[in-house]
Length: 372
Ligand code: G6P
Image (cartoon, rainbow, N blue to C red; front, side, top):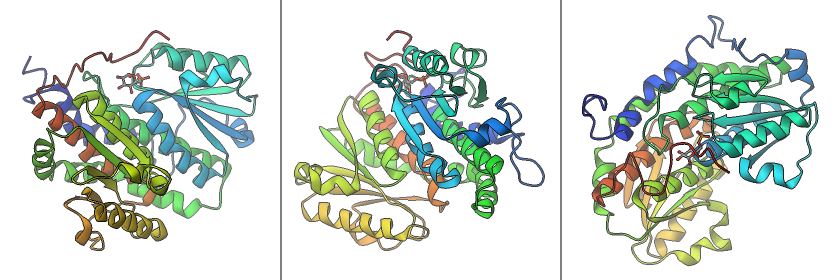
């Protein structure tokens, strides 16, 4: 009913709007007054986390994209090697696991069969399993050694939005916590990031307040067949997620590419008028990557692409090459997906609506896939 949707046209729009609160709730009670993390709920003893020599993340769908982003954060802050794998591929290839491997299973529902099977396989090999899950008492957390719950609240729309943002927050918390427990040389950076995380809900709120031009753009593209997404570093999984949302909701051909791979294939797809969404890294921090992305935008635009550029506020270098410019607040590089994903969700939702699709219940898809 309309009341259940809180005045929004769909559960998806309601859930997109709830993201600032979902993010804040997932941080609540997990950062103490001194700015350190208190994750007592992660019932894996600190000495075991100090001995962990490998992290393996397993998940499906949107949760898998959260895992891809987590890898950048985990390896950077903890220096522990991290692999990310689709849960459906994981156990069939005889992965190398032992007691010193920490397996992180990410699942909104906690019931996805492939992810559950990956959890069982990991535990049979003696690995510790930490679930990141949004559903209290569901099967995956019950079968794991420990769980860090995301506090997104119930997610009804099939396409995941607020659960994804909170999965990212939970992944950052785990990465920072591993760093804290193991005492890495990134101590100062870790404290700074914890402070930045505390303000990220407001940044998401700001993005939500500026989405009208994105909606207009989406409506204008309703007749397109294909949309491509490009990103690099953590912007690459964001591009994959933007493409997934568009497939799920708008039933359009959409693909996400690592911008560095452009010349190895995707650039052949560029033709006059093709919309290409580009997620630009911050010009601060890893500025080399920023400059490479700006050249990519020039390259595809010279070949006729209609560029939709998602870039940090104040980044003027992109302005001459953007047919459409979407501004996001400045964040530390690793946290950018929390703000960069939001316009892509709004874009897909609006485009789907413009094409006459039912956004909460896309055809052929289920909220939770409980069969293999
Ligand atoms: C389905 C849903 C997706 C979700 C995926 C994983 O495909 O439609 O939105 O990302 O399952 O679900 P999980 O509950 O394990 O996060």
